[in-house]
Image (cartoon, rainbow, N blue to C red; front, side, top):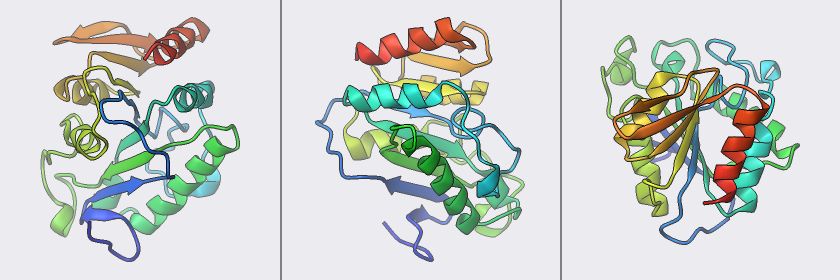
Length: 209
């Protein structure tokens, strides 16, 4: 993997970072999460670490995965980089702050993938429908390849239909849509994630993996 300015960039618009030293046996399912609007409160194009705030209830979800040996993987689109609003340096600071907030609640992420490609981007990042950009499944597939995951048994949590579609196209069977509605997308069963009952359903599912 090439590094640019000290960042873990697999290519100009793709951040792939393995965090921590936890080793997982091949064939484990993973918990995939979108970041902005799912882990932290969405602030639009996030470039200020001080503005980061965790969404209620998400840290216990990640902690449950940690406790049950389920890899936790963040998969996030970052078109603000492509559009020139901020760079990978700002992404690194914001993402570091989000991970710090989680760790304060005993919740830890094992891998982060971020895609900066967008059709409205500049230069090398100006690519429409890049395979790594959700709703395409590229980030999930890359994590699956690197960690030897069982994608069919894996779960995804996100706040946009694109997150659910990415999960479905990667072969997942279960997803939770933040503040959304229940549905089925070509084999992916989508549950809402709104209140305590929905949260307990997600926690129960994680503990059963």
